[in-house]
Length: 89
Image 1 (cartoon, rainbow, N blue to C red):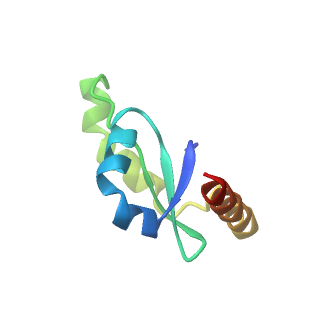
Image 2: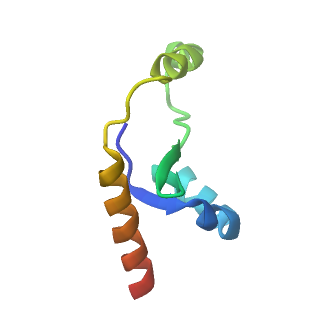
């Protein structure tokens, strides 16, 4: 699953309401912990069909245990890039 932005656990602790607003408006976030991907925050699509809603848990279960689409080195570089962009802001 693709994501729009990367945030850290520290960001989650300090800006939860803002992050919730961003996700609710459609932003997909990859949350990293200790420079490693921990989980994703994705918006719920209210317009999803009833069928896909019923299959949500089975789709999630199928996704568990799969190898990530990116390497640890990729994540480290993404986190560094994110931190540089935050420092500039």
